[in-house]
Length: 398
Ligand SMILES: *[C@@H]1O[C@H](CO)[C@@H](O)[C@H](O)[C@H]1NC(C)=O
Ligand SMILES: *[C@@H]1O[C@H](CO)[C@@H](O)[C@H](O)[C@H]1NC(C)=O
Ligand SMILES: *[C@@H]1O[C@H](CO)[C@@H](O)[C@H](O)[C@H]1NC(C)=O
Ligand SMILES: *[C@@H]1O[C@H](CO)[C@@H](O)[C@H](O)[C@H]1NC(C)=O
Ligand SMILES: *[C@@H]1O[C@H](CO)[C@@H](O)[C@H](O)[C@H]1NC(C)=O
Ligand SMILES: *[C@@H]1O[C@H](CO)[C@@H](O)[C@H](O)[C@H]1NC(C)=O
Ligand SMILES: *[C@@H]1O[C@H](CO)[C@@H](O)[C@H](O)[C@H]1NC(C)=O
Image 1 (cartoon, rainbow, N blue to C red):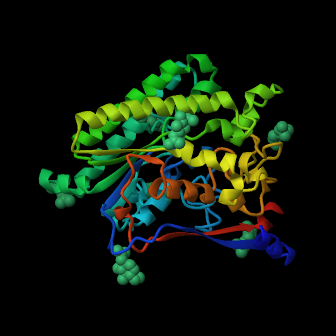
Image 2 (cartoon, rainbow, N blue to C red; image 1 turned 45 degrees about the vertical axis):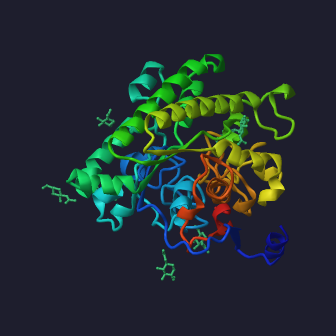
């Protein structure tokens, strides 16, 4: 806060802040335990696949997306790195490349990780959403992403012993996913009361995908739950109400939408327990994104967020939550905050790099994985996440 305001008073055209999140120093551990990360998911995970599909309909390819870290839009829906990127860094691995990039360019390090996630992707098949009259952003569902992975395997290994070795030493990040399924369902008019039946479908489909990965030889699986959607500027705007009872007095979040996230997460964990019990050779770890981020809303200062920065997005089309569905971040006249590291939400839907970094730290060092992830797997060189958060003020003057 002090640093930021003193920089502001210098009237710099942009602000550059360096934020270090310290991870406990791990002594005597050389390198990570995993050889690669393969990830699946939606816009919380996509690091550029959508660019090769239908970027025109999708907003994360314009400045100021990517501005704080990559200094250009990469297709990541944030100002910087995502949880998948930060996790890779902490395990001492390169950032997993978007799968579709490997089609167009020869990419080094394919053995060290590939990201199959696509923004807007659902767990349930596209036909489900057609049936409920919902228009989806992409039909590259979880099942489809898994098929990409199988195609990709052929280029990686031929002999089953060789494949088992590569797959067995990799970490599979399966999600976050499901959030888009619920967005499409709710926005097309399915009521909250009817959601449990749909949650069951989503969780079953996730279980099917996880079982398939295990059949292919996956041993280490990290499966995130969904985030507290009732705290996002998009939900707070869409479902804004005069009824104060609908809001959690401590956080200002919409209670019933958070309950939906909690319900999904409970059901998912039950399913993961059964899969684990049937597959003792695997390590299935639940990543509790929900609880890892609830602290942001309960005690923002502890994470360097301002109170305003918890429910208002950093980049958006104005209004009480700086969010307007028809005036997304990056369009002319977008309102941009000075310091994204003081905000949880980047664009009203997705989080800032700062929030993703805190979640990653909470997972890898803190209590938010079940069972706990071994810190032994964190690379000796990755003892800290370095974050440069800068905002180019000339952007918002356009
Ligand atoms: C750690 O950093 C040192 C020096 O930069 C480098 O030589 C070494 O290869 C790195 N180790 C790993 C596991 O990345
Ligand atoms: C990928 O390659 C195809 C065919 O060569 C090309 O049409 C397309 O523009 C490329 N996509 C990107 C994002 O570079
Ligand atoms: C997904 O959509 C594209 C474009 O509309 C279409 O070409 C493709 O066949 C679809 N794939 C599936 C699996 O539905
Ligand atoms: C597997 O076999 C195919 C076809 O023979 C070959 O093109 C490919 O390069 C091989 N992959 C590996 C990883 O050796
Ligand atoms: C996570 O949140 C849920 C729902 O609020 C709660 O029941 C659970 O105890 C929390 N778990 C942890 C580890 O904080
Ligand atoms: C949202 O943006 C649209 C398009 O610029 C504008 O017409 C509308 O008034 C805005 N809505 C609110 C609530 O500000
Ligand atoms: C800020 O953005 C403007 C317009 O997009 C660009 O011309 C300028 O180079 C950027 N400056 C910095 C320091 O990134």
